Image 1 (cartoon, helix red, strand yellow):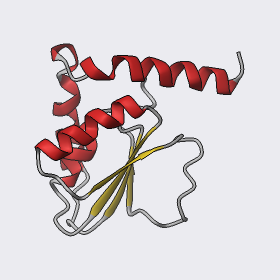
Image 2 (image 1 turned 180 degrees about the vertical axis):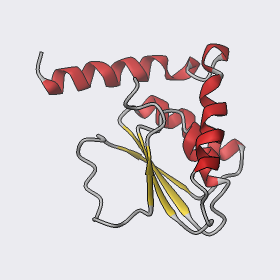
Image 3 (image 1 turned 180 degrees about the horizontal axis):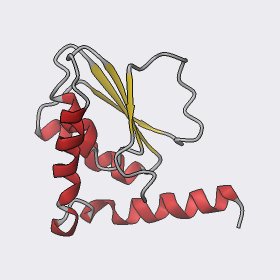
Image 4 (image 1 turned 60 degrees about the horizontal axis):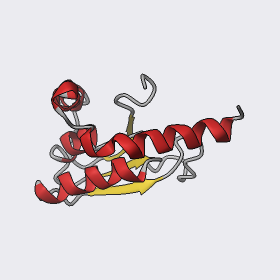
Length: 124
């Protein structure tokens, strides 16, 4: 199996499970995201990149700490991003840009972000 086939399988898998991803069994994701956000010691005006953002737990926790900043949250699963967008709307968080993309080929300008995080992307 080549790299592109593997990425396609992973994307399809996360798209398929995205609707139930925030269930009780994975309740540690939002709590660990809050802890990670606190460890960043942000000033509140940073531009943050969240790679492999999933359903947005880290992005949402960090966004609350950025009254003058912005977060770009990237994931290759449209299903996971849909969940993240719905949560942001329900929480009235507007300083997040959700972007569908491959974390290995981000294409952002150098030095665009002050901080980059990846909560569970490497783990999973």
